[in-house]
Length: 283
Image (cartoon, rainbow, N blue to C red; front, side, top):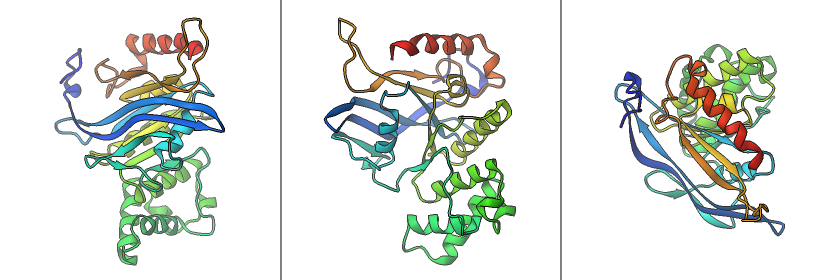
């Protein structure tokens, strides 16, 4: 399967489903928050590359994104439906999916290495101290953080704390990482750094998948290979039907908007950004 543009970097195939959201609905306090959410992530394979998956999850405030995020993370159990992980279709539970919030939460009284060792041991209580330390040091090396091992969170830059928090979550989860507003309050240069980091995380393992919840349409299009747009449907009279759901899914690979240098300069990129912006008020 290739993109319409037959770009040499675009040759790929979709393999196993590695995350499946099936008929998920959520009622909280008698209010319908989510309604019949169905969406999935499949392993994207590119010959000669290690390619993880990146989904940008868009939607206006009040559409149910935060609730869906917590369900994906196993922090909330839906009223109906399931979130299933891997080829074995294992129901998600707390700890199986890593989640990085806007405020990177680390133990202030532990060193960077100490924070990661705690995460590694949380994933597997039977792991030895040596194995936890080795796995943690390997993760630090993977994200260019080796020199921070003996430092404390207060001694790190904001970018370093973000990398440590991501490393921590990857150590205690199963290839899945949720990021909540990773581009919020960042200037242009730091947004580019965040996009680069997300790509590094995804491409560290063939099965790694990152879901970025964001309001930033341009950054979402620049970082992802797939877009989920959440909103609420309307009845024939234009009244909102309670409960957010995925109203549109955009395959950026097929659109030729993935793995391309200078992607933001493409006319197709600007056209799609404008199309989503025009859709926004109706969500």
